[in-house]
Amino acid sequence: GGGSNERLQSKNKVRQLLTTFFKDRDCVTLVRPLLDERELQQLDKLPFAKCRPEFRTQVDKLKDKVLSSVTPKQLNGSLLNGPMFVQLARNYVDAINKGGIPVIQNAWENVVRVESLNAVSLAVAAYREYIDSQKLSLPVDDQELDRINLAAREKGLERFRERAITGTDVATYLKDLKGRFDTDF
Image (tube, rainbow, N blue to C red):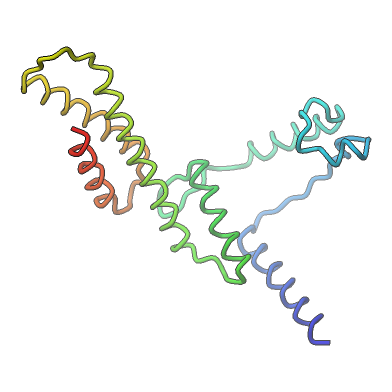
């Protein structure tokens, strides 16, 4: 009836999405990691060294193959680091699981937001670390406080620039960061 036709259409849609988003594909077979069925049920809890030697060898070859063929992923001219790539993948999976089609721009905006908030947090931490490292003894004159504050801000801004995504509108996050510096000082 109609139910099986809908399931078929749904499977075809997933297949089409996968082939659209993953144009280059390859398959590899691996031997069974463990022979004992009870251990196999707990595979995620066992150390890799407990797996069969031939399985470990095949996994190592697979890792080498993958790492030798990958290129740094970019989106909108920005290189994706590991957490950014994971966030982007989560956005795609969420969209597909909700029956939609991933919208790259929306997913990218979410990655930018998460990474920018992380950049602000790291920058504030660098600012505070610098201030804490200054082993001040009271009283401290205003010039010395200004010098320490400026140096701490520079450390924080440097950390922010390392993490912030280039080519995006970071002004909002930079303003928030400077406000956090003012609050801390």
